[in-house]
Image (cartoon, rainbow, N blue to C red; front, side, top):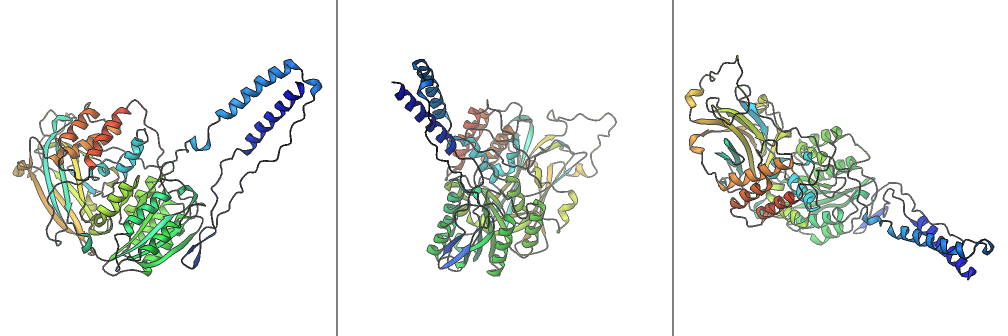
Length: 581
């Protein structure tokens, strides 16, 4: 029996060593092909250096002298071999190891309570981005609460459509609305809702589009929720285009290249082939890709049409111009030529949300996060007009509160959209652009003068006299001003509207109450400092009661997310570091 144990011992040790030697070591992703054919042309794709995969050395069987191997040794060795083999079987598979979380979010300092006596005016740029809501949904569906800096409340509120009246004439790009109602989470304060509803345009009436798809094909995009989903998403958009539209496709990884020259939108098979042939590999030379994409957009520029670069990426730029400010300067320079920039974020683990948001802001565009094909359908098909066609640019909102009626106010969200008071009348100061059909909402929690809702004590030596003239408008809570530039114009126009007692509703409209529920949800995810114990269950009940018309089910999906967050509240929110400017 000794030879049998000897051979068995040698065979198992050999297998154990071979298994260990063949275990792959994590390293940079290799580039698939140096060139890729599009039609009859060979297009250079990357210049990245690949690391050869590790190879297992051939192992010779171990020779174990039988003279040193008795029956007792065999029993002990057999037990050790079973233990070692079990340890090998217990090793986790590479696919089961979660990637390191390198997601980057800009730091958010929540707006505090302002005394009207000290700061009577609030000025901000509008925000049409919706990425934060979709990204939060992705994290909740993964079974985790989002980090606080990932929660931009204004993007959550503006993810939804509202029933406010729209203008019927394109000469007026939007209508302004305002209403006041009791605050759901604090019966001692009021909630002021200021809303803009943009003029909508039928898809067939959109002007011709010159679109450049700038696609990240670096190694970091090599997962199912990145490049494959990206290609499906852009295919949805491409199917909405016609013969007067133009599509170009630029890719970037270790280097940048053109895989589709400007092509009529009705050549769908050619566009689909170019997209379907893309594969991921290499590092991320984002700056080179952006420069080339803008060059292609200028080449196919349509006067009076939609000229836009759509960058689809996880934002993980790691070679080329990695100075974020230099990238923003490049985008700002290009926007002056009439070419806007839309950013679409994909994937998890290394999404650079902070950079993606800033690129869209500086590029006169919008930022969406695509966590599923359904979200791509919403952003690129259902809301194609809002995504592509700008009806008003540099839109700024200013609210002046009447100290005779309002003692304190707090703007909910818009922390990174605040402007100086003097910026409102300065047409050189950039602000957000409004797309066709967009709904924009800003919420202020206000404490009335003399009410128990005030949180800040009066000063001992301060005068309590109201500002001159405030008594002449005793029936007004506030005065709303809005500046915008009509599409293609350089000078702004002004719209004003007082918020009077007639705007108060003791119940509040469905739109106000649903927006309040979304705002409360965002505040709760960020810690709920001002919510007075207003929990997820009450938030869900408020949203359910105010759900109203919900043809696409987005409001119903919100209810599911609130319930899911409630189930995850015992878990500690993950910490994500702030991105660099």
